[in-house]
Length: 137
Image (cartoon, rainbow, N blue to C red; front, top):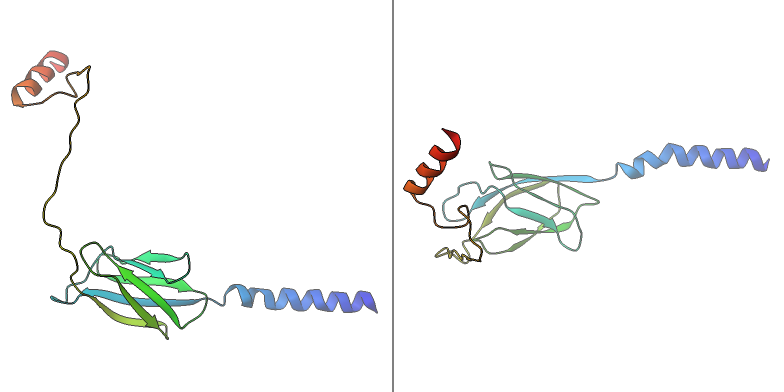
């Protein structure tokens, strides 16, 4: 009797276990720039308080698997302000990101250490021509 009951429990466990594994929901949506309406590629979309996230593709479209619906998504990108969006269905719709901090200038920092070789020193057209003529011709 106990063996029969145990086998029934194992059978039920194996029957319903795949349903628990595939109980995830999938959320899709589009991310656009608020001022121009252009799609934003490479935007980070992360579930708040979790470790899973994704980025938007070239057309601003993202797809994210979540354990259950009614989640808060944190949407962020360089040059735009971070935004939190609560999603209650499989379609997140269109999320518009406002312009945030603008990037003004690029600063390049160099370092010269000794001993310097040809590859770490200043290179101009004349040096390149001499180098290739000496070693490759």
